[in-house]
Image (cartoon, rainbow over all chains, first blue to last red; front, side, top):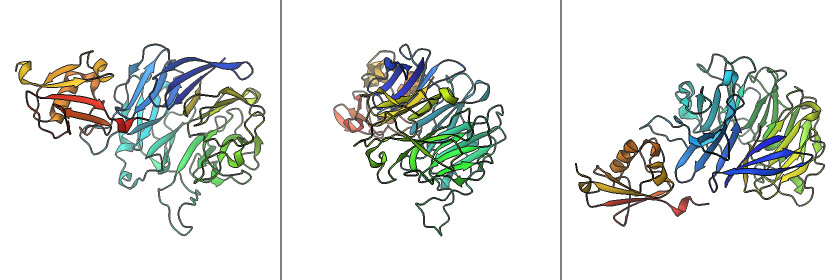
Length: 352
Length: 92
């Protein structure tokens, strides 16, 4: 049985089931509210939900049972009486030793050591001397990817739109860029992009932690030196524009992406919904669309709306669209079926 | 100071629930922002819901001072009632 936490424009939906037998909605929380992201913390067992009300601002809530009582987390705010306010929460990631990290807009990182009940702002990033030069992407100045290093809590990688990749190996005290080799097409070829790098998603190969994969704003990249430098591996895809990415933790040569037509037309290309898989670290890509809509299907899949459970031949894949459909595969993408068809616009999908 | 000499802030759901289930709150302050800051001090669960970290009214929150649209710097007096409402501009 797999649990899917689906954040939508109109609340959090919990679905339970299997790709073979189907899924059912077992709970809905925050009805009517935008749930940007939800996940279950593997250490505490709690469900955490980031709710960004248009009226009341971003809040983080947690509960043992998504259908039960929720409590509001403390400390999810920027310093009082400053020049900026917290705009949105984008991602929550479990790190080493039970620590949780959370990223948000404007380019901020929080950490929690009590299962998400209380949070503190990571000052080294908030007070980084280059911050005045940081520029937002289309979705804001969003810190959307947080990538721990298995077994090494001092190391962490981040990605922000549009401030590129950031790396620390001293427990969040100092940060350095990891942008060598990234070639944005949204600046002239002879221009120096500086930090204005719109990373869309960032992942680490669990079985080979120095290997990372990135979906960029036009470009899919691989790094074999822990994010210091990058090689374009997008050749062979129908489009190298897209948002989310998933890796098979059993195979460091694997990655899955969901291409969209282009920057200016963010729908599945050619009216076909297809996931693309590489098993040779990006040298070749194969379409995986058996069971997915294949005609007049113009879906948009957002950054946090693709996840996995399990690994290897039992790898399960799930993604949701802004048209309210969620699709799942129980065989590493070889075949797909609809998990839900009529949810509100899907912002995030996370398995538990 | 007796409550009747204070400005009344009136809340609807979900703010009322966060404020102990009470709609009307008598508070001191010279401006809308002052009385809302006092409200957040008195009702800590409301912190960050009406005013952001900068102390500014959130973009899609409307305030009315005795029936007239107000803003953070609108002066208030003891006879005034400040209604805090979600703006239709924030709906989706």
